[in-house]
Image 1 (cartoon, helix red, strand yellow):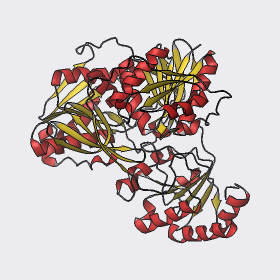
Image 2 (tube, one colour):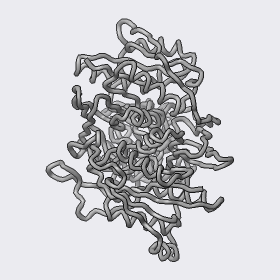
Image 3 (cartoon, one colour):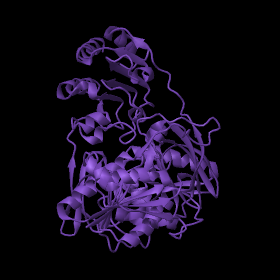
Image 4 (cartoon, chains in turn purple, orange):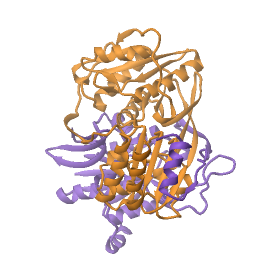
Length: 250
Length: 322
C-alpha cells in the first residue's frame, strides 16, 4: 500500500491575517506558518492505514523552500519520504495544483491519494475533486472514516443531513474532514529520524508545467465590512426587553 | 447573451431551497450580459422535479437510472454534457456538501476555473468573470477573476435572496447523448442525523453551543432555547471535535455558513473560524461569562453571564412575553 498525501504550508489558522494597505496581498512579516490542519489529519490517516497493513507514505508539499519544515513535521510523525514542488501560491490555482499532483501520481503510482478537504488559507475545497477527475478515478470527499478492504476503500462522508458511505476501488482520491482522526504529535525519536529521511525537490519545469497560466487569479484583497456590535446588556430581563421592543425578533 | 446554467439540488420532487439562491446569482449574471438562465435537473424519474424547476427558467434534464442517487462521478458527466449542449458561460450550484463535492470535478473535466463559496458577482463578459469571496476564514474579502470561455462557481446561499418564480414556466429539454459507462463508485448507505429541527442553513433562528456549555447538560439548555423558536441547533468546532454534537451542526469556516434572523451564541468565545460562519446573521445575541470573549464585540446584544443561570432565565422570560 502506497499512499500519497498532501501537506500545504498555510498561515497559522489561529492568527488573524492582516491585509496590505494597497490591497495586493496579506502582510506576511511576523506571520507563523503551519501545516494545513486538514492535511495533518490526512497524514495521520495514511500512517494509521499503513501501520495496519504495511506500506509507504509519501508526503508532498507545493510551496516555497520553507515548506520543507512542514514536510519534516510529517516525516517526524512517521511518513517515509517527502516531495517538495517549488512553486508559489500567486502563480497557482486549484486546477494547476491538481495538474502538479496528477504528474506526481503518474510518477509515484500510489494506491490512494489523501488530501485535506480544504486548505485553511484559500478555503477553496477543490483540489482533491479536480485531481480525481483528471486521473479518471473515483472520489470520496469529506471523509470521517476510511476502511480498506479487498482492494477498495469504504469511506464514510460528512454530508448535509447525515453520513453517507461509499465504496470505491483503489486507486482512489479521498479528502479528509475534521473528525477522521486526531493527529499525533511527532515524538523526539521521530523528529531525529525525520532529519535523515529524503525530500526530493521538483520544479514546475521538471514536471513539464512551466509557463502554464492559472485561470483563476486574485485581483484584490480587502477587509470584509466590519460588523457593528458590542452592546453590553446588564441582565436577562434587559436582553428580552431589547429583543422584543428594539430588535423585534421575539 | 451568455447562457448561465444552475444545477438543481433536489429535495424529493422539489428544489432544495438553496437552489433558488443560486438562481438569483445566475439571473444577475444573465442580466449583466443580456443572457438567459437554464436550470439543470439530474436524476432518475425526475419529471415532477423538472416541472418544479421550470417555474424558474428553461430546464435541461439528464434523466437516467445511474443518476438516481447523487454520486460525483456520474453527476459530473451529466453536468459536463449539459454545459456543452447549452454552451454555458457560467455554471452555478449552491455551496452545499453536494455542490462542493460536484463542481470541482466538473471544473477538472472542462479545464475551467472555479470560484468557491462566492458572495457577490462583480462582473461578467466574454473572457472574464469576477466574483467576491471570503478567504482566510472570513478575514479577507478577495476579488477573484476567472478567465476562459466557461467559469464555475458555488454560491454562498446567505448572500443571495431566493429567486421568485417566472410568470410563465420555461421549456423542458433532455440532455442528449449522455454516456455513463465505466462508473466505479458504489453507494453503500446513508445514516441521517436524527433531528426534528429545521435545516441549519434554512432556519430563521439558530442557537449555537460552544465549549462553555461543558457537555450534555449545557447543550440541553441551548437545545431548549432553539426549540423555543422552532429553530436549529448549531455548534462550534470545539464542540464537534469533542464529540458532543455531530459535525453537520458545525457553524464556521469548515462547516455551515448561516444567516438567520436571530442567532444565539451560547458559551462560545467567537474564534475567527466560527465568526466566518455566522457574522451575516441579522441579530446576534451572545451569552458568555468571559468579558474578553471576542463574540461579545460582534454581538448586537452581549450578556456577560453564566450560561447555566442565564439561559434558563432567558427561556422563561421569552415564554412570558410571547
